[in-house]
Image (cartoon, rainbow, N blue to C red):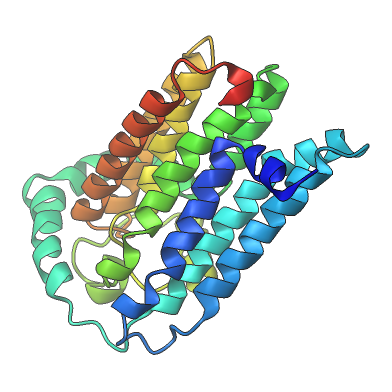
Length: 293
């Protein structure tokens, strides 16, 4: 098979990933003040393109069925790579001019409007639920893929991934432009939850060990959760699972603010990213046969 034919066999979700990594590879000249940025994004983009070429070739061989399954799941790993790559754009120092404005919104929402007190009015019930919602967002894409397999909707996986990737990577793409630190670190005494559960302790440990530090705006937790919901609305003939995911996405939004993982501004921006991403994907994929989405 020729190189041209291999490229023509790329799926829409493949192009989203390739386009994102090429976009990041073009960013370094615009951020000369970021000490860790060198040639890494270019090498990563080349590697991602090579992986997609290899998978497209493998799909045409006698191992095509197995390679097809790998193509369904590999975007999850590449999304993690995209997340970690953003750490390259860590600034020398933060000036906190974004955060000093955003924290005032949080104090108004959680304190003056009594949202924190309302969440904690039933003791640990709602805090436990919200922290659990925040925890499981890390495996959300894998859960959705598993559901599509189990419900016999595997042919919709590429369309779902397109929604999910545009919504998630769309948030990552903005991180370098809004260097910022999370409220739990920068304002540790401002509206911190007064109820601590083991799930919160686990969330804080995961963030300490595995998160990046370049920025928190917009919230990729929120944008990815909503993007997953929009994707499931698009591909599932019955919408019950999609409605559950939409409720879950709203819960994640509340949990990120209550838990002080994000500012309210981050959450609103994350919802906005997901809405724009969902609209673009819906427009571009509507009218196509499931096998060509």
